[in-house]
Image (cartoon, rainbow, N blue to C red; front, side, top):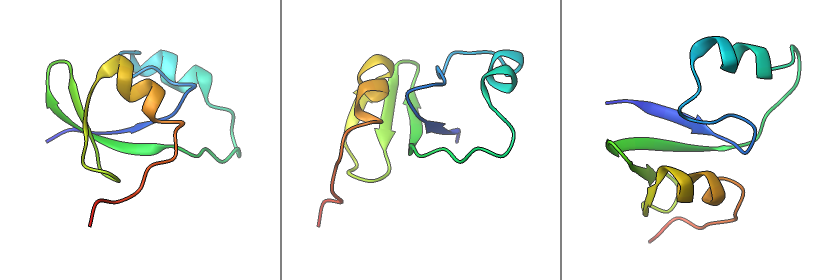
Length: 68
C-alpha cells in the first residue's frame, strides 16, 4: 500500500530530487492524504472518493467532508 500526501505544490509523479527541491525548510504544508488504488486512481482518505491523478491534484485544495 502506498500513501501520498498531496498538495498543490508537489506533483505525485515527481522524483525524489524534485520533491526535496520544492520544499522549504521549516515551512508547514497543508494537504490531503490519498491512497494509491491503481496506476491512475487515487482515493481521498477524507471523503473516500476515487480520483484520477489529475483530479486528485485538483481535489487536494478543495474542502470535502467525511462520509458518514
